[in-house]
Structure formats: C-alpha cells, structure tokens
Image 1 (cartoon, one colour):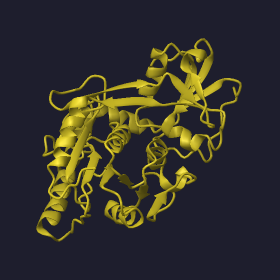
Image 2 (image 1 turned 90 degrees about the horizontal axis):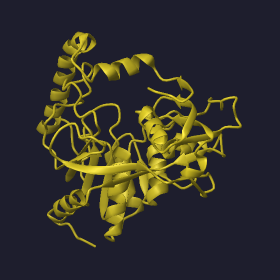
Image 3 (image 1 turned 180 degrees about the horizontal axis):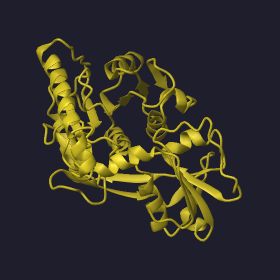
Length: 342
C-alpha cells in the first residue's frame, strides 16, 4: 500500500496473506482446498438439521430483515444496516436492530444505551445506536436479542439484523446480501477461499457496497468520506482545513487500506498509517509518540478510541444505496403477510 510516511500494521501477517490468497486460486488456496470440502460438508449438515427440525428456527411477530454476506472479512454490512434503518425511519416506521456484538467482552443479552461501553456491547452496535438512535440489542443468539428487543420496545414494527445471514436460529422475511469490490474472490469456500457458503444462493436483494462491483446483478451504492470530521464533542472540522498538515491515520476495520486511500484521495497528507485488527478494543493501545500530529480514525473506531484519545477526529463514511434498491426493499416489505405500513 502506498504511503506518504510511516506505515504500522499490528494485525496478523498470516491473516493478510490468507486474504490475498483468497483472491486467486494459487498454491496456498489449492493447499487449503481439501479443508474447504470438510467445511462445506459441515455447513450442509447444519443446514439439514435446521430443515429437518432437529435444530429450531425461532420467529418474532414482526418482519425481520437480515443484512449479511457470504464472504468473510467484512463487506460493508454496518453502513448498509444504518442506511436501511434510516430509510425505514424516514417512512415513519419504528425500527429495532439486533446483533451479536462481535468482539465485545460480555456474553449476555443486553440493550445498547447511549453510555454503553463499546467493549461491552461491540463497536458496530454502539455506532448503529449512535447514528440511528434506534433501539439495539446484542446477544450470542440473535433470536434472543430480537425477543428482548420486542419485550422492551413493543411498538417496534421492523427488526433489522446486523449480520446473521448464516444464523439460521433467527427466522427472517427479507435477506440482503452485501458484496464489496472483491465479489466472491476465488469462488472457493473457507479456508481455501472467502466464501462462508456457496454462491449463488437464494437471496432477496444483492447490494454492492464498493466502488467497482465485481459481478453483474444486484444494486449499487455510492460511498465517500464526509466533508467534515467529527470531534468527540460533536463539533465538525472540515477535512479541507486539514490539508497540508501531517496526519496520523488509524483504522481497525477489515480493510484499513481503503480508509487510508480515501483520505489521500481527499488531498490529505498521511505522515503515518496505523492498521489494527478489526474490532480492536484499544484497551492496551498507546498513542504514537508524535502526539502533536492530528490523529484521524474511522467513525467505528472512534466510539472506543475517544475514551483514550478524546482529541482524535472521526471521519464518517457517507453511504447511500441507490433509490432503486430502496424501492425494491419497500416492495418486498409491503408484500409480506400481515405487514402493517406506517
């Protein structure tokens, strides 16, 4: 990855090599291919157990929209969840969100509140609640989170699940499958490729979250960094005012390089880039010695980082699915039996 200055990557080098291997059917992918057959067999058995009734799928009395993916490594699900929630809220619907809360320190079912520690509820659920003000519940089993959500917020009309396409314990009415620019990679299943399950598979809506859809079909979205960064106190700082100043850019997301590239595309000078593992909790992290340089990060990282570095600037992502995507989503939602529009 090109850099204006120093680059620091404290993630796993082996994970990075595996991500690269998943883009082609090279020697490493071929070596892992036999294991992918075992993974596929286990996945098929699990699906049969649910279809035969040995494992049960729970349902709730309101429509459930699952936003997920079939590719490992993050494909931009959280921005899609927030966009879907805000769209439905704009239609006057009362929407709730459920999530596993990946990376959190706790293991119970709980509601995400305004003062919740992201380490206890997960960074993505904390960000979703902050951005949408919708009630958000986290639990290991999303069906437990959905039932707790409806018990606490009985006026909820639609539940959106952040991830969970493969979480068959939660019944769903609409499935949205998200892809980034990698598409399906080399087309092989884990661990020889990035696919959690075979593609194509039945799905209600396909949304490409990247700038260059890797395959035809589905809907597209525009994505760009916001013009203003945010302080921990909620003030806006124009990105243009940071031009010419050496910045330290930090990202603990699935693809940190994409964030760094977007900052550079805005004409910003990155004196140092710091790539950390996805869902990094920052508990033991120390700010670089060059504390005089402005630290910029993703909005997802900021919900945790601000507790240690309150002067960091968060740069939000403006993500907007096409109007055609929302038209199709509204039509599918309206067609559900027993659905009551606002």
